[in-house]
Length: 353
Image (cartoon, rainbow, N blue to C red; front, top):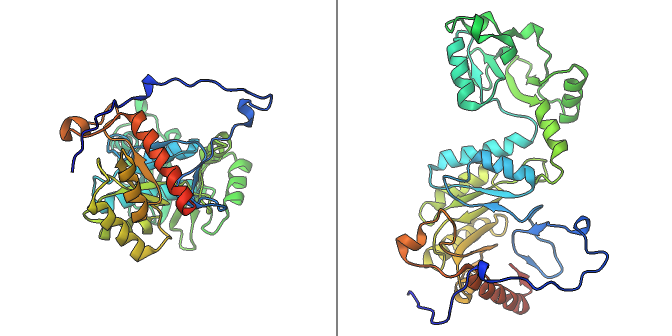
């Protein structure tokens, strides 16, 4: 039931910090922004950290697989939006997990009879200039060649010309076996001054692509957030309706952490969802819940089994919850009260959320 707070509710711009004493050791170089994401017990470590304290909202206009990759490169975590089909969301998660492994499943593939016009349209759609030419135009078809922007000149070629007429054919490509390690693949790329290296099986079917730019990206992003298999960490949003089908698909796709996406988390629906996840997966699947704005909401979700709890309702610049539902609370007031409840919960249970 809704409740009216009689005391003032404050936002962050109403507060300023009073600086305390700073020692000689208090300098930016000594600061670590590494942040635990999921709950942990006193004396233990969290099962999941972010290298910078930043996540992206579970919103269609914000968090897709591209945002997930970009944010993981900087050390944060993106939660891919759940307001799409289960298959589509799982595919986004899978693309993120496959991206950082260094072994990329090609998403830009053409057939020998594909025209230059179609190549240009595919490049515009994917943003990728390197395309695998396979017998059936799929990511794992028999590799017949490679097309890059160096293979054609738009100003001097007819748009109807076929790929087979200007591609670099297989016999002129440098390739490697499908079981080649990432280190060796990168050595081959550097030794031969390549931009990409196709990995093929014993039947000449394309398995993966390894790109020079991924090596450069790794060196340039020292804080990138990786799992134990050197893949980018990614989260995914779920709801309280189709979780029995969506959660298994996202777990299978490789999602590192899930979060119930709702404007208001103090509900039986969220506790049911958490109970189902715990019953099926125990503690192997990490799932957050929310949002809440007070002590009672926090306690409810903490006791229901949430691994982390989101705080604040309707505070974003593009969030319409307050206008649509008429609920919310000053962000600073909500955070202060929930932080106190979190400390209280830690003293009682030894679990820090």
